Image (cartoon, rainbow, N blue to C red):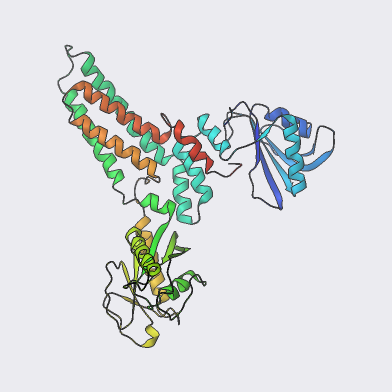
Length: 429
């Protein structure tokens, strides 16, 4: 990515023809370029109607424009926003005029990357911007907004500040061993170190709830052939996803569909029937079915009403084909995927399970694998510091723990992940 001396632009609204298209501009030449387009720049943060013209004086559009001087802008740089009519010709005309003035199209995530580099947000807040744009459900939106507000970063910065204080106290013990330091200084260091370690370990012991909510859950539908797994998948999805047939072994590979249960995005996976396979292809389907069940957050084990349940794992046991008159095993939910009987009860049970797997109470949960990896390293370093034989070794472990925490918020050592992170963003954000 080129330096922030470039002035960049991008359409921040959706692709295709629309009533309004929002074009963002950020960089040192933003004000000059806006003046070149509309003649007279409005006062800061006040929308004004202007006619936009290119360098030859050809009219491009009549648009609302905003001038947003830095550092009080999204990126921390001088910025502008143009609210154009959303036709393709208008957008292309304005884009061509900006290129002629020296601007360049923005790369994915470049606006938010500049906001991070200019100190407008830390890395956890930048990640929350991406999560908010990608949110499918209200629960995901709430989690992303809480992180965007800085609640998660504040926890990590608080721990880092306490670690800096501990490190300073430990350095004092090393540098002034013969001075009259209070005898309880080392005991206080060890007590605070142990307390901080407990807090991080407790934060990590969250059953991946925040990550599960951000990524969505995986529910696997398993069971013997011909118990109606595919029919149940179609009924829960509300559409025909899987082929339904009375022939055993019809489902050879796993079929997936996305649904929302309890405000949580869930991927339902219909798997091959579990039995002694008749051929190599079916055997591979059975292997994959068992693999999906092992990886799933929840297994919906399906049996036929009147038949015994013999599943290895059954988080929710379903007795299907209730319309044929069979009995329902104890603890199972009786349904008829064909007639619709019992489906609302099953949806309610699955929704409750989805909420339970992702519900976070108290402080905000960590939301990404990289947070977890850094915190695990920090916890290990703190444990090492507590048991260190030499004060110098304890200080080194404290420094490494502090560095691990800094990687989460972007204070240190994150250059290697910035390109990967911001490449996932949409252009214009």
